[in-house]
Length: 477
Image (cartoon, rainbow, N blue to C red; front, side, top):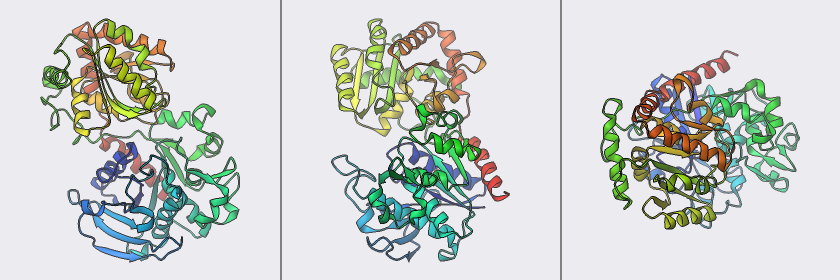
């Protein structure tokens, strides 16, 4: 089975969020199951230096008037995973990140940039002879690839099945109608049953409407996005497409996130040497100039600081816990007013609160290993990966019951592995924090929850079986 896996970011080449982690891990897991997966992404500045020498290049012309689109074939040096890069200097070789300029604003031509990328994905799916490799399935991810499904539909030829995976519905890639001609699609697609979206057009909607299967990154999120509350204006489209919608939970790369082999942490440990987790806690307290205190319950946060993540709830909710001696260690950046609230909390509790604004991959590992509980009070969370990392590290997640958090963290019954609250309110979060402190005060209770957390399997191997079933169902349709 040949699968072309299209994504706008892939770890370790470039990453702004969870999409990159999935795109970096799922294709490798599928290749281990003998699926012939090839990746495709834009050739951003500096990407080629991280890959093996280019094996071949094909000029696909200049359909968007922005310069020739060149398809380069190479592979990852470590895994031998093949990857195609779409090269176009004017579109992709820019100083800043993949989507935003150096001022943090969307590039004004993001519609054309990702239309061009999507067009190449569609071209080589439809005409595999161009590269001597004919995909059986095109797997799209998020709005940046959604127009590939529209090009295939517009060309009105038989084409391989298309899967569109939604990692976060909120980012729908919508653009002004007056720019629609820029993406070289026929106007008959511009209807309420096509790509039209509230007086604009949406690349993600194209990916939903014209796909043969739609997936999201957790079963609960797949149900939530059918409602107005979580559907971000696309719930009607999704309800009419619900027959082809399913949720497959993301996996975790345990080669990268496992306390028994983690090179970044102070003391490696596993289920049978869980007492060594304490050494990581004391080391993290030292690193942050906090008093070394094994008895203090240390709460952690690794997150973008946004309201979506519920990070506005924590400063008020955690005060009573801090007054009772708990600690808070946070790594993240985002909303400036939220950053300032956390820095103010650190000023009030300098012996108990350590805030680091920014992102540091190695430090995020030390934080996961060193804190006792991880706070993830999201208002919505398609899948979430930090709670899956936390479980593996015996760090108990405190989560709001939504999306992938609801599918992976449980407070009741034999699966209990964390703490769950239901309403995005300071009061509900505060109650969950109090329950966690009560559990922490009983060493046996806490250890039972830790063991339950660490024995859960969220490996990509497990997720891959569901992907294989979906792919086979499309090919046997």
